[in-house]
Image 1: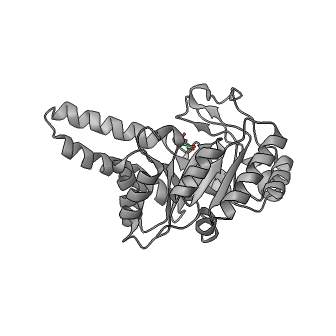
Image 2 (image 1 turned 90 degrees about the horizontal axis):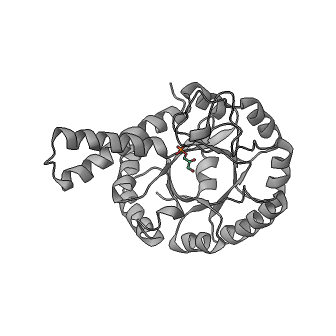
Length: 279
Ligand code: 13P
């Protein structure tokens, strides 16, 4: 059942929902298989950089088909986007939430644009995630030197930002990176705790791939309700497909597409279970 992000996140307590990037029919089915087998909600997340793979309406059509018999909440989300026209196109196609990413802009511009997107999206029942602070890329991550491209979220700015924009969820920067880590990450749960004291809307953690499990649990205990995972799903799936082709170079393409969904599903299932904090 398709719901918006606000509804989905307000239905959960002391756990987080995984947001998994998809780029194809097979990756959508991989996420939906994991939702079906765990019977737990998930967010299907599509980035505008993958519009060359599929249009918004194609994604919406496949998601509708794949979820019509699943009796669990699923949200269809536009990941990082700074372009108002593209955000509008995703909303028009039926996405149930969008992320406006103005994190590279000066604070006032980020506020102004996030508020405009929130007003527009809310009038159509669509939820909005915005971002304050910015994540480094994995290639620069290092326990002692994580400053390349990284700007931690300022807890006081976060409160002001949320009050002024009316967004439904806030992505924060506390030391995770986009991509795999090169060294042990330094996740600043202390900053997260300060943000949580100032902000009452759900907080979002980007850069989930490879983040130590105990840190993920600590983040969930301190206000993170949505966690994004992309790189690990892709790397695991490509590795397993490469193994399959190495072992059987004559594997039929039709079998590879089915295997692809299975490989995606196994990583997604691992994260859905971890984020549900039931063990
Ligand atoms: P990873 O690729 O590091 O998992 O990050 C995904 C993400 O944050 C997508 O917005």
